Length: 199
View 1: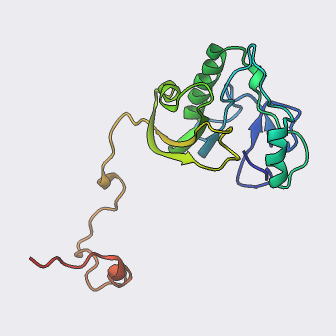
View 2: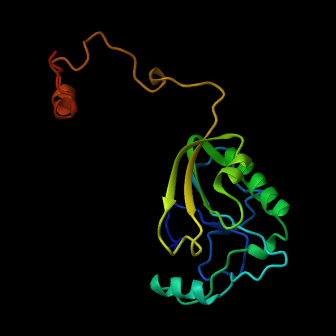
View 3: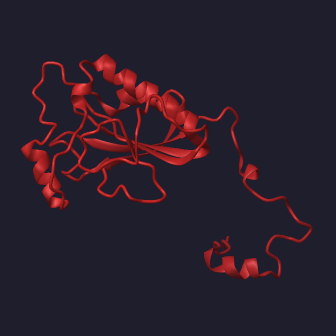
């Protein structure tokens, strides 16, 4: 998912020890060792399938090695597919993880969820995210992220709010001066304001 895990602004988490690029912390996303409302953004790239009775090239496979070489990485990759022996186990893992994400994400934060339709269509898997609202869905076209012909998505979500916010919740109180009248703010905004409509 990423090649640089050395940003001072990002905490990289994984529970697998045999990774070519080591995470910041080893932990399970179903039980995160973080305080409530700690993060602005969470990126979640879970396994997209399970391993029961299937021959899945997930560890050091030639297809993956070719992708890594194009990224300048020598070594093995790992997807954690065999951690889940059936669909129920994988769905439970994703469900428990998204509950923890809601806990540790700030109220105005966003969750970026990556999913490839190897086994489950995107609309079916999103039913797990019961306490989230989808903001945007991005179709990934890069063959490095699409598992061959399967469609991959990044879905951007926010926490569902108990109360709907309005524009006034984000704006400053009105002053006694008319908005922008004879002020530097008006001059700054002028190039961006819509021209008056002629009727």
